[in-house]
Structures are given as structure tokens and as C-alpha cells.
Length: 261
Image 1 (cartoon, rainbow, N blue to C red):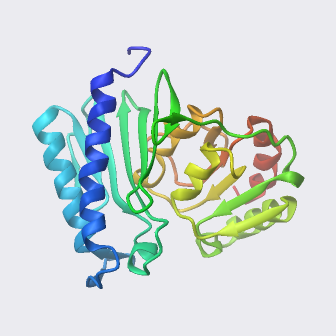
Image 2: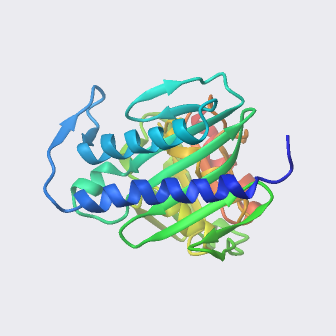
């Protein structure tokens, strides 16, 4: 495995983000119809059209690569490289007119997330992280901030409703230990962490297309992102995610979550 992502893949990831962003902007705040999927989560024509366009572009450029997407399933998951796509992460925000959703694009190579994009097409902010490269926000390098204690930390989660049973108790312990807890930013919170504005993101019940793009973005900015057991994230992770901008927060945050394992 090469030490650094090749420039052509970085350029292609940016092209993919432009494709999805153009489609999202076309439909945002236009009153699109909303369908309910089997799990009762919402989906729109914007989600489906954006992912279809991303998949078509990948098939043209890298036909041997695998693809896993939220809306249109998986092909060639046994390939060495797999693109993992969430065309609109935060569809509930999208259909509510809240510009905190984003397109997530990850490239997994030999099981390791090596490239990630968080793109907010309304504000036109784009985080790009890749193996061997510093994370950038709209082309400028960004870093997580120093925050050595949870008592000084700002924590984000998409919603408190994503935690149930013992997980809710674990989250409550962590929430009570931080200085400030906020909700509702979807993938945008991970970008804020990478840019040094918040300190912890904790979530549960995520799918690979919800979290894999975050790994190169956060790690390339100096942070850490693992599951609740402290393990590296991959296609088979369970979906309970802990991200810390300052790596020194990780042991204390993990200890508070561990009771819900």
C-alpha cells in the first residue's frame, strides 16, 4: 500500500463532490417529495439522483473499484478499493431547509479509509482528508484544537434520540462531563471538529457511509476517531462512533462510554 494518496484521486474526489453538490443545490428548499424507507428514514429525489451520478462517474473512471452507497446498494465489495457514498448525509435537515447536511465520500483501500470528503454544498465548504496529506477546508489546511479536559470540551451529536438503553446511559455520563453539549449538525459537526471549533462528537447506529469519510478528515487534522471500544473504523464497524479533536480526551471519553458496551 502506498504511503500517500495519489493526486489524481484527490482531484477525482473533488469532482465527485462538485457533481453531488450541483444536484443538492438544485433541489434544496424546493419542496421536493419525501419518501419513507423501510427503516422510516426519509429519502428524496435529490439523494437518489446524486448517488446515481456519483456511481456513474466512478464506473467511468475506475470500473474495477467497488461502490457502497446508501441509496443504491453495493457492487464489488471484494475489490481492493471501495468508494463509500452518502449523497446527502442529514436528509432530515435537507428536507427541513437546514443547510447542515452534506455529501460524504470515502475511499477504502485494503480495508482502511484512506480518503474522505465532507462537502456542504450550500455554504460551499469542503473538508478533504487523505493519507499522507494534511486535512484542508476549502483548500486551506486546518487543525483540531487543544482541549486536554472534558470539562472544557464542546460535544456534538446529531440527536439524543439515537441513543437507547445502556447507550443512552453512557451518553448521559459523557454529556454530563463536558462543558457544552449541542445537537443537530449531522456530518457538519465532524468538519467543525477537524477545523478546531468543537472537541468531541459521539454517535450511535451509524452505517459505513455515515462515518468512513470522517476518518481521514479528522485524523489528517490531528484528531482521533474510533468506535466506542476504541477500535479503528472500517466497513464492518458497529456504528458507535467517538471522535476527539484532542487525542488526550480519548481515554476519559471512552471510559465514560464503556459502561454501555
